[in-house]
Image (cartoon, rainbow, N blue to C red; front, side, top):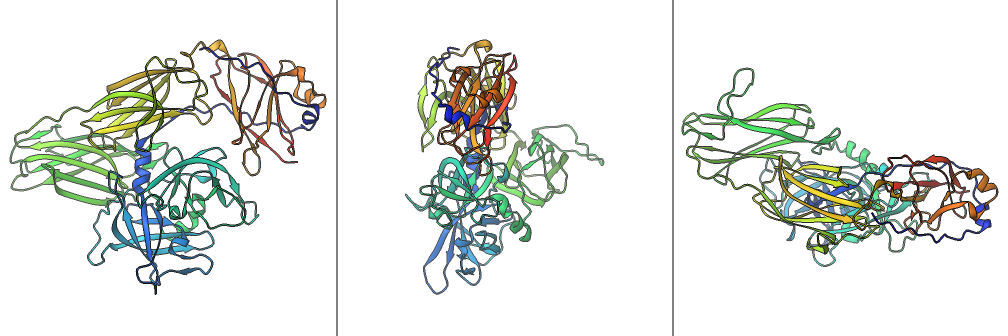
Length: 605
């Protein structure tokens, strides 16, 4: 790895250094790189619905906004100001009625008006409202057992920090009525009523009026807030927009008796780890010999599966098709616990109708597994999945095409934060288990396994990123379906990587300890070995500085030199108007990975 050593030091005046005084700095080892693919984004887009609310006394006039599906049985979260006047606490129509538009599965067209919903609970002060699907769009008739809604997984907004990536999804009405996705960062926090609790996230992600009630998601695809444009005037925020943290909705959802269900539990996602078909089952529930082809006249077939990560109370759906057409389906409220074995089956005393069958198993609206079997003569053998044309690029366009793709011998620049991997696929099935494994300098850095949700064929992208910078080195990506390796590719960041002993790069973020806002212009200093931080604060001397970095508008800095492994350094951080932070005698481990992330919280004087 060829690393450019920047030897130019930042001149720091004695006055600024003398302003530093005694608070211990929090040292954090850098987090591992994380991968983000289309699956999380696709689910979030499908879970975001359009909301239209008729206004009493104004025929043909509607208040419009966005909403987020929380449960498979139709609970939806939106803003109160989509449903009514927040200042008066009065609804736009006496019935609390709203119409719900659902996105097409390919996400390339306009939402289809599918359901009616009614207000269950609302809080004008929080500007949040909970709706429940109540009838088909045109009214009359019963709702289907399976509404076909995709649900949004919920995150923890208390874990959000300044500088975190955030994406906003909704229907702003700008450029048409289709769903819109914009990206940005958490720019800070706002305590609107000055009670010591931050009421809003501030973001530079594009939020316009129709986005109200939609979803703000993190890089895991989990909802961390509700975009709320043009409501609070407590503080001028310029081009920044406001997001209500999702944890504020907890009491409202509880009052509305919403049982938040996601296909996640514990440390991992819900999974169906195996699926077999058999025509016999003993009294203890033990299946007979597995098969995929059954003779004509078979009266009963059982689909037996092993599962983990399930949650009682979620909606579990099973659906059989025969020769591509719907045959038998059903739904239950799951009561089988977190893990174990379960079965569903079909039966016909006259013999199950011959044909090619496919079974789809879903939890909380998310497809977890598909399986095929045949009754009678097997018609054809399914073609194996393929991944091809793997390309690495610097970005992704609005139509999901690679931006600045790199050739195999063309390294990405030092300081790269994200690399995208694009590939084409064929013969895939939703519910298949697939995985992406990333390696850095021959060591496994990240493994991500998921259930496929991209359809039979098309193009797909995933990415590997770090919120500050990816380490220089040689990268490799392997793509699997099940245990079979379907594609692999390699690239470099920096000029081919290099040995571990080259040095450790230091990156980090400096924020206000109370507001978590970035402290632009804050200085981070590493002192020469043997120099005490306390002595330096008492008597600043530029000759004692080993390296330094200055925080940008996002509070992020990069040290201008590399640290040596096995060496011990003292560190100081400070800014005008803040008490200093310092760390005495921090030893860089011999096996310390680069970059080392050091995050600092500064307390105002």
